[in-house]
Image (cartoon, rainbow, N blue to C red; front, side, top):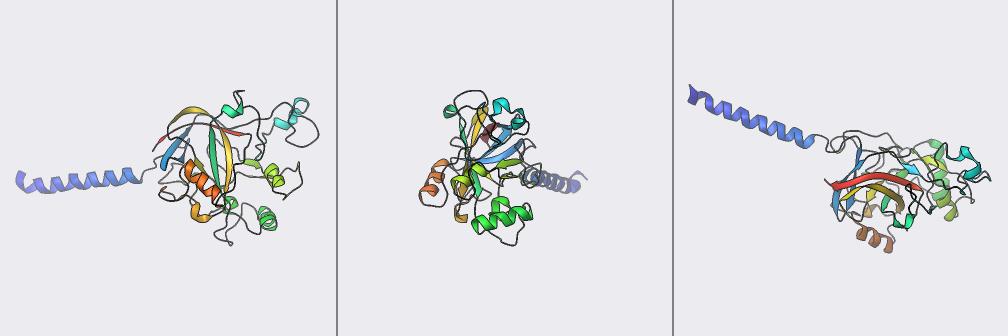
Length: 264
């Protein structure tokens, strides 16, 4: 009897092992407070320990009402995370020149003109300004992005459009659009947080504040694939893309994130 049932039992154990292995492979690899990133051509996991911070310095006027923040408490009751300005200090008060950088890649190309923008009004404005509605502002972008969180099997949580864990949900693009000559100076252009992916210069880092540096990627072929086997997955690759005209230059911001980084 033992010999008769030994083979079915072994087969059952093998089937269970395969099932558990398949389940483990299909289970989310990142927790709700994590996102993916790239560095040195490798995939990373960022673990966020607290919320974002957008610096309002005492003599800044980020809401453009003619009053500096020191005498305008309403200015920073709703953080204004502005792309195209460079504060002098980070959230710890240290010089921003000493703060490590997080390069945020933004898909500034359009893969499907029929795909909806975050809002019809935003889509119409972008179409007027640029002739396209970049995937950065699409509810369902045509390329893989790390924010918002894509959901299973990559992440335990699937983020809504315009969000990402521990990130702001709004950005002021006014400064960068003014620099491009698209809007007058000192114009607030508030949009949902754009679809994006991340680049660090090193793979493993302890928890700290990172200054967000925005880079608009204009060539779809340069965009990193979901598995990181192609496209911009390192800082040297980003610099090469910028030099070849596939991505625009670095754009600083007053937007900071607090996380650690490790290899997946």
